Each structure stands twice: as C-alpha cells, then as structure tokens.
Image 1 (tube, rainbow, N blue to C red):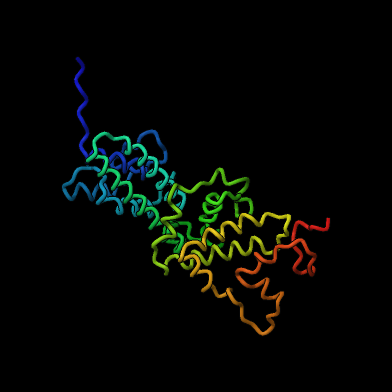
Image 2 (tube, rainbow, N blue to C red):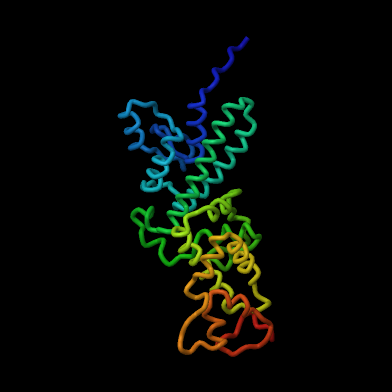
Length: 282
C-alpha cells in the first residue's frame, strides 16, 4: 500500500495561497511563471528575524508594498497588478470553499478576505496618488484617463471605446465585489478626488453626443456612482455642480456644469458651437 502524503500545515497552506495571489516568491526559484517576482529584501529580513521563508497574513502588507515599489522587468502596472491580485484572491476563495476541514477553511477564508481588502485599499492609494508606485516612470501616469472607469463600464454593461480602449468591455472586468468594496465605507478625503475625476471624464464623454451616439454607457456609469453615498456627496460638492461666472446664461451653464451635458443629449438642432454628433439631420 502506498504511503499517504503528509498533510500540509495551516501555515504551509497559507503560504501557498498568498504566493498564488500576489505572484511573489521568497526564494530565487520563481518557477515557470514569468509574472512571479523574487522579493530578495523581504526574504533577507525574514531570515534575519529567525523565521521560516513563508508568507503569512502578518507579512502580507510588507510583501505588497515591496512588490509595488520594486522595479521588476516582468511587472504589470500597479493598478493592473492590484486588480489581478483581487481576482486571484476571489479565485482562491472559491477553491477554499471546497475544503473539508472547517477550521482550516475558516482560517484561509479570513486570509483571502484580508488580501482583498488590502488590494482595494492600495488601489485607492494609487489612484489618489498616481505617481507613488511609478518607479522610474513618474510622468507616465499623468494626463491619462482613470483606469477605474473601464471597470465601472464593464460592471454596468458598457463599452470602453470612448475611454482609452476599444471594443466592448468583455476584455476588462472588475473582480466580483471589488467596486462595491472600493466605494463603500471609505474615507471621503481619499475617494473624493477620484470620484470628481471620474465625473469630469463622464461629462466630457457626452459633451457633444447626440441621441444617435453612445451616451447610455456614461449615463449608466453616472447612475452607478451616485448610488453610493460618497458618490452622491462628491457630485454635489463639485465646483462645476453650479458654475459661477459673469456671463452664465442657460447655454453656458448647460455646457459648463458637471451634470447638464447629460441633459443636453437631444435630436433637436442646436447652435453650431454646441452641435452634437452623429448629426441627426443627416
């Protein structure tokens, strides 16, 4: 009779799960996956503390910070990496649900939940401070559309063709529960500038769109954001909620306020300056 394989300890299982989620290794042998990076400094710190080279929930944030601030040739962008980690955490959670050992399952579910929360928290930090993790490429993140918007559009069933992407949102998908966690129970100071930027992008996307154009996606995204208390608060506190100026007539307000371009969508002809596309008269 073949000898039974020795059962892994909870610490070993935790180490395996976290390595899969964060795609990191504490040994030089990173395996065949080119995305896995070797965290040499963390490994040296662990050994100097007299501990085994294993990942644990106590090391989770140190590992994530080291990975985000590190310069690795095969590394994804910070935002894409965090989104991918969140998706992998969700996938690992589904595997954990099939564990027969209830005690072990409960422990590992707690680990995965903590990993998801950490990914969301650092996504907020990154989007509020885009240059923080852009080592050696600090200018690349400036003047670009928010990478969060395609995820929102995919959540509401929209496309990304007008937001720095092409085709439908099938290639860009938010991990289950990620956006809910991102916009719920958060510090308003960190989320407010992110939301204001999203509203400005959505406003610009419908500025000169006629009723024949694709204004529905932007409207769905707007409705999605304002259903969160922080989203509604950020919208009405925007400087363009009620524009102020000496020459503010009806047309000027319609084009300068943060919300009125959504009401401007129409099939009726307009002044050439405000003309929308596609032209309904053609």
